[in-house]
Image (cartoon, rainbow, N blue to C red):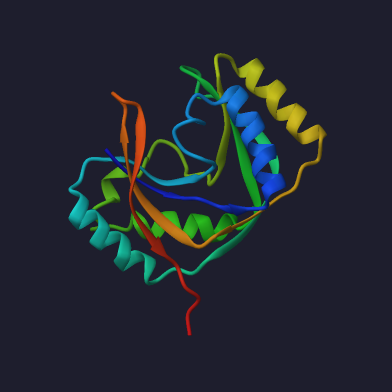
Length: 177
């Protein structure tokens, strides 16, 4: 299954702060670093997916983001998550998602009609909503501010049997003009 993600450029201190929480609470922390997933689990061929990604990337520009709030997220079944939400950069990351999922695109089928896209970095995936709330409350009480720059889209493949995330291509984003 192919995914499109964006990996933030972070200060060393911000990366350590996020990684400490993820290593303790996110089973996927060892698979890939902090990221925003823009296209989830799409069964398409790599070549056409990369062409589509390059076409969309040519219409986008880099994003400066600031993350200040952690939010518990639980759908009522399965793991509860803690999402780190951007105060700044939300609209740009949302625009990236919408551009990738526009009608007629290879990724259009991955758009979830049953839930809105919320740009985020996952901090935790835990067994209960209560545990997620406690992790989020602890993060928020510390008033952590994470500054990030996103300047590329990444096409990757998750191999669950291994488990491993294989980076297939990195497509840089450039300012227009």
